[in-house]
Image 1: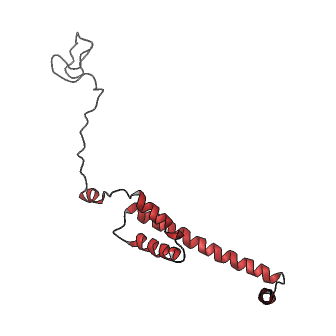
Image 2: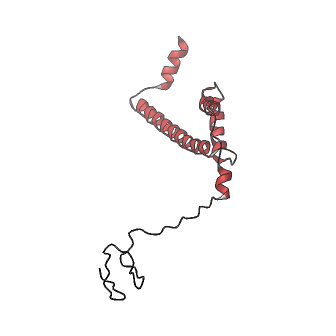
Image 3: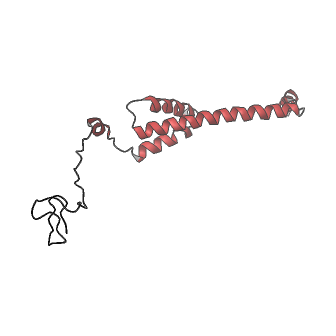
Length: 137
């Protein structure tokens, strides 16, 4: 082997360094890695929230099934949960998504009811005559 730095011929073909001048003969096949320092944000530690209990989820899901006032209370609570800072992040996101679905469902229900009524009136249906028939019997 031949040293490119001092020009001497080396007897050891597997040498990594020159025996005479100490120059690196072969490029190292490994790289020096530095371990990155990991910093945890204090905010992340504080935001670690407890999982929401089964009872809490069940109560949230069953709320609209309470007769008379349940659906109204449900919508009010969805609004509260979606804007409250005290609500867990997962429940806040669930409340926002559910609120969007409820609003879209109500919009589609009203649109369908409007279309159905227009079709009924266009077919010649007389609601007043129908109501009088119901009252007579």
